[in-house]
Length: 452
Image 1 (cartoon, rainbow, N blue to C red):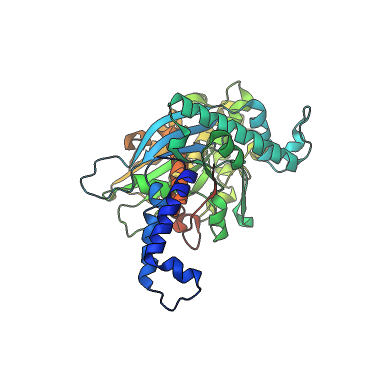
Image 2 (cartoon, rainbow, N blue to C red; image 1 turned 45 degrees about the horizontal axis):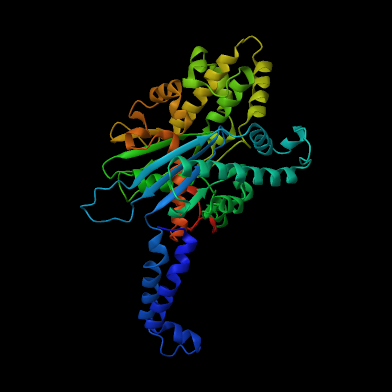
């Protein structure tokens, strides 16, 4: 098992030999295609499948993820076993071999949060040798993010005693700092060249823009991975990811029905922002603070009036729509219209938790019913919020709400594994998007490869 660049080099002669034996390369050299035999094309296809692309089928991959909540960077080492089709195969489709997570350096996190808001860097006070314009800050953060990601990967490799040469590729999504599907663009921040250079491993990044090039939203991309690993012919499964933003994947029991997936609204990004503003905590552990408060029903209805919730899918959202400034403006409007209502900061946290539970369950209930054998599996950091899980179950009486631990994958690592899978799809020349999910007009190979 070697690095992709090495594979391509060592298999080049094998491919050339196969082409020469087929006679195809001779017809190409002399420009005479009069003797071209269509069977040669099959030989070329076979040659490709038996050399480079086959080598990427199983083997080791690293997946990385830092979501909209910006609570840290997750990295996993895994091996896929998706190419086996024999009935006697008992190997799991994916083996999670090692995991590692690290908090962002405080300054990098501060800059990333600023870049997520239009002109947000205007609030930054530059230190010595730091930028003083938004575009320069973007360049600074791209490099700093890549250096940090490289450290995370190298620590993962060291702790798992893994040789970089045995890893085929790293799938690194980068950090989304602007997502404007209505304008046809999305912007992920990372310099993959640095990661490839610092780790010695090829890097696949920039997954979203190819989907947008064919009319898609560029998100969510994880449903294709959910389908590959979690679909069950005997039951409808709904995967609910509670990261900074909440999104669902509906995996129907029947293969004749298309997979559905889209963002449902805010999750941890508002919960984390509000508790950070009022306490010394960066997140609401177990949802204890929210549970201590009381849901403000009128405020909840006001927040649910946001236009995003009424949009039909496919749809995606982010910090551009839901952020602390938006919340504070909503609270100001609420106070002006309801001067007689008093509330605490904990009450707002309870209401925000209910906003996530209500907006997500409303969508999920469109696809489940007592007549269907349905289950909801939750992943992402929100799966560890006991109060939020309780509220979800209350809104989803027709199915059991569990975490993806019951499917064999801990909820905190699902998205990182997904980007390892997407990197594998790219190297194998396989599509990584689901047009029914993103709204693209066709399936395409996602991402760009920076070979080590």
